[in-house]
Each structure stands twice: as structure tokens, then as C-alpha cells.
Length: 395
Image (cartoon, one colour):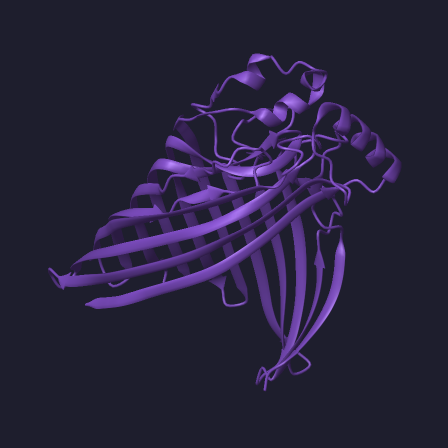
């Protein structure tokens, strides 16, 4: 039997601001703001948001294990979680709100609690072959979308996320422990999945959380390690992840600032209506990922040597839940690395020389949507070819 208590507390603060450093332009803003009766900052702020959130979480949990037979054991676990969040923010937005009192103050607090459980079975086919399976529920507390650049005192509250997960797997060793295999298949059923998206409110871009009513993910994971001969170690991993929103409606407000929609077409359906994202894939979740490693060991000059070649592959993925091929798609990419290691027999120290990204390919691994101001997009590339030498000494 395992039992325990859990406590967590955090107090977080965040400040986000956009300033205009051109004083002459600010004078122009102030002129038109005076004519229209709209607020303009004396400190050149176009937007400033200051937020804080205090989070407290308590939980109690327990798990029982029963050896049903010599080869089979059953487990059952139960957990109760209570979460409490409270916080507030204050925001200023140019041309928004009351010019005599333009700063908007908001406060919000809420609490959530949930019972979650897990039941599983472990079965040894033999001493070398093991099967397992379990069904479990999970939960993530709700939250608040602070720092929205509006004059409204209301705060968007994000609902808690819940999951029902199924998983079965196999682990085994073969060929006199020279082959090790681990594999699993899983299915996740989400309710109110918390999804982050880029939003645009009053011309200010910000990240907000919304709930996808229903979503699911399924896939498999495989890991293999082999020692065909004493001098060679081979290993590899592969994962397949198929994700899909089953019921999810939300606006793509950011798209209304891009391309032709940036030219005053704010009444287009894309800007006014919620989009049906049923069938879209999760963001930042490639369907396929793989890695391969090969290591050769030998002795020379009284030292233990090893040389390793590595390959990693990441498949295509989306950067936002809208799956817009014009702005959100990132293609597959891969990388080759090598490493040479030397150490004395007692392993008191070791020297490693390495090269990362041998081919020196600079590939896009993440990309953002174009800026609402400059229309330029920010992307992250793989690192260039890197040479290195590392020395480790063990006391």
C-alpha cells in the first residue's frame, strides 16, 4: 500500500507592455485621442498589463496492490485534489476605456476539486516477458485569462480539463539479455481540453487559453536496445501520435490581421464567427518521431573508447489548433550527430568530442504567425553545426 499527502503553493506575477518610443508619433496619438475623447498614455504606453495569480493545491492519494497469482498483480489507486486560485490584473490600452480613468482593474477567484482513480493489471508471461494495462482518469485545474486589453471588468475563466486514459504495454528481454524491447499503445479521451491560441484584442496580440469540449489522442511508443556483439550497442525509438479535436469551436481572431484580411476586412466570417475545428490536429504534436543510435566500444592505449552516431527525426506538425497551412504548418526535419568518448578504466574522468548537426542544415522547427504590426513572422531554426570538447572529472 502507498499513501500520501500533497501540498503546493505559488505566487506568480507577470508584466507585459508595448511602448512607442517615437515621441512625435505619441503627440499625434494624443491629438487624436483628445479629439475623440480616448485615453493616451503620458509614458508612451500603447498597452500595459500587470497580473498576479496565487495558487494553492492540496491532494491526498492512496494505492493498493494485490498479488492475485504468482504471475499477476492488480492495483487500484484513488486521489482527491482541491485547487484554489485567486488573482487580479490591471491593464491600460490606448484609445480604450474612460479617458479620465483608463486603467481597468479586475479580480477573480475560483476553486475546483476532483476525485481521480486508476486501476491496472501487471502480468509476467515469464521472467523475461511482462505485460501491463491500466485505465486512469486525470484532471487539470481551471485558470484565468488575465491581461486582456479591453475595458470590460469581466475575466475569462478556463474550465478544468479532464482525461480518461487507456494504455497497454509490453516489456521484454530476449537472446540472453542482448535484446530489450518496450512498447505501449494508448488512447486518451479529453473533456474540456485546455488549448492555447494566439488572440488579437484591440490590436494587441496575446496568448489565451480556451477549452476544446471534446478531443482525443491515440498512438504507440516503441523502444529497442540491442547488443548484437559485445562491441556494438544499437538503440532506437519510435512514436506515433494521432490527435484530433472532436468538438471545438473558437474564433481565429489573429488571422483577421494577416494577408488580405488585414486590409480592413474585419466583417469577414473568419473574423466574426467561431470556426469549427473538428478533425484538426493538436498543435506542437507531430504524428511521427524517431531516433537511432549506434555505439562501438573498444580499448586502446589503456583507455576505454566509444564512438556513437545518432539520428533524430521529427515529422510534420502544426503550430496552432487552426491548422492553417499558410501560417501554421512546419515540415519534417532531421539531424545527424556523432560523439567520441575516452576514459580510463576506473572512470575517474572522461573526455568527449562531439559534432552536432553534421550536415549543417538549418531547418525550421517552430514558427509563429506574422506580427500584427510588422507582418513579419518569427521562426526558430535548428542550431548550426556545432563542434565541442567536454571534460568531466568525478570526485
